[in-house]
Image (spheres, helix red, strand yellow):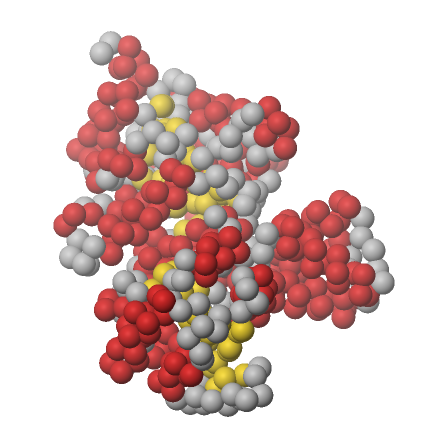
Length: 502
């Protein structure tokens, strides 16, 4: 349900206390005023701590620096007079015992009166004793239609015009920003050149990166890795290539739903994170990295608020890739965490969104320890597919050496014995092969010459792969994959042969 419809319904149903978490005061107040006018021409009163009540000459300044008096003003409005009272930043005063008591009294009183109190705040911060009297309503970031209308109004005012293609690119790059930030960055571009130019899209993207950084939850990742940078994993690559056009309008006309996501399970250093970056680059979509640990905050209710904020930003930026690295570390042992159920609530919000989302946000989650993940996240409907990424086979190790050496020594590639290098590095992961090459380069550099295949093998002999140091854990993971609970990312994995004999 969109904001206007939900807010209109709450006004008609006489919900007394409404809480709207948003940074966009100006835009949400405009929407509230419009709906208040449509619903019986209700009067709108606005209060903040510095200036008190504003807009009405008879009440100007009332309640200035007095949040309790701001609530007492509601009793001054005649019982039959329809009204909406907006209180800015009022979340800062909710812990006060007198204010909490007054709000509960008003919640009881206003059920029989056509009045509503609306709290505007950058975040949800409701004390436990007031949770039952407040109704939280999410105010979404501007849609593509909102942004397009704002850009067109701006260009009518400046007398400029835009091509349809440039307008669509500009609208897409602005998605995920607040309207205030959009206006600011466009004004900056016009001030610099006198008009908007195609290269100004980079300004918008930089503003978007800044916004995402300020959430302290998501990171905007530049995705430069390509599918060809991944050695092996042919089954996974084929699966991804088949879905390359799934976010297009043609796919919608065909009847295809948006792809939901992918869970990559496997041994550390086998290319799971690299795959997430390569997907974003191949599909030409922005890559957002979620650090799940940042969702958890000290204040009651703030973790849930951060989760909703993360979802809102990701959906506003859609179509996009949401990369969740090592999801197993965040949600392992849910029942045993002594955090008053915060982790369970965050997890519940997250998996419910994953199951019900209709926005084109493709979730790529990686996990090393599948046993510690709650079974709910493995249920069909959360992800389109679960792939197991195991240790590379000899052929895949050869491909991985080829990828790295093509980048490091393209002019000298034929001098390296790929077959021998792949044969002599059993149980090595992709990350360990990369580290082997770094060590070999140190050997060659220290002797003022280029590194050779022998240097690579010498470096490999000094590295103990994870497959040996964590042999039991990796064996358990391979047994789990061999039991048929996940698709194998590699076509010629030894596990595929093992499955045939089970």
